[in-house]
Image 1 (cartoon, rainbow, N blue to C red):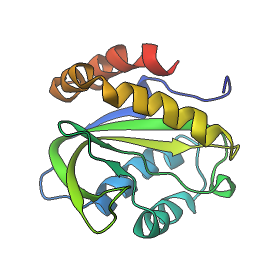
Image 2 (cartoon, one colour; image 1 turned 120 degrees about the vertical axis):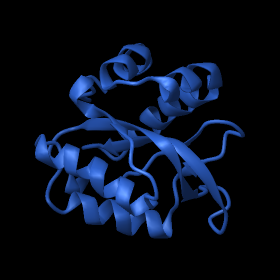
Image 3 (tube, rainbow, N blue to C red; image 1 turned 135 degrees about the vertical axis):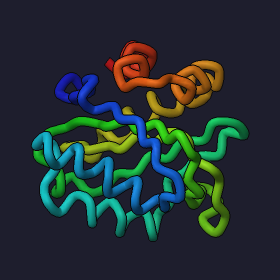
Image 4 (cartoon, one colour; image 1 turned 30 degrees about the vertical axis):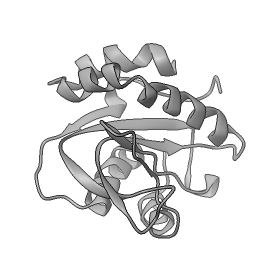
Length: 154
């Protein structure tokens, strides 16, 4: 996955309260679209897929969501990480009728379908380190977040 882009411009903190998972997905998707990684169809494809295949992982502490969609909506491979100052209720991957409060969202924009599994493994390894995720959630700037997470993804 050498062609996967992750840099400090692909890390955001979202301070707003009262957001839905769709609000968050559209905001992150707009970052990927504005920077040329995703096509205009990307945001809606993310939202549509999430409705049928929820992506939240309940870690029993700091929970994460990993929204993604088909490769046809992507120009070049990247992922964007958002840290939510106020956790958002998100439907769980393993129990779609239930939600959990999500604090970190890793949105994937992949150009190869098989790359999804490799990236998911990296995300899972990251979120299993709940001490690190706690530091990420407590971070006050995108640069600080990037410095903490980049070694795990680059």
